[in-house]
Image 1: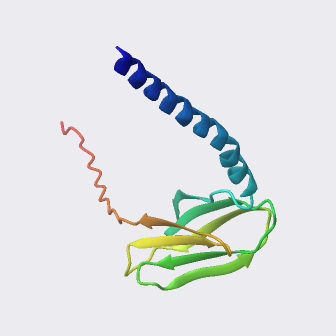
Image 2: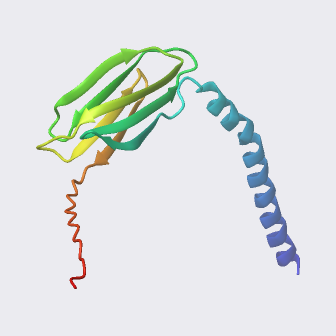
Length: 138
């Protein structure tokens, strides 16, 4: 009986210790996430195609106005676009030619501390439309 009481006390003290460590660590986690508000994760979105050009939109919230690079590359490493910005709210639409020899486009947003890359796999689809008109002969 005494042994069971000691085991229960040990289990309860371990649970209390874990809960107190967890609760005391929460303020530190929130401070760490609040301190890194320089750049939120950028978004790169495929908008479709128009006149044999691929349309993409890149958005980035850069609250501190730090410098960042936007790079667009093909699968073979050829750079299609590179530019440095320091906009606080970056929103840019890209019209890119459909690559003939590669099937992948990669957008890279690079700051001094971080690098974010988003790749898009391209698949050309050819559709053949054939309209047949049938009329009844009398």
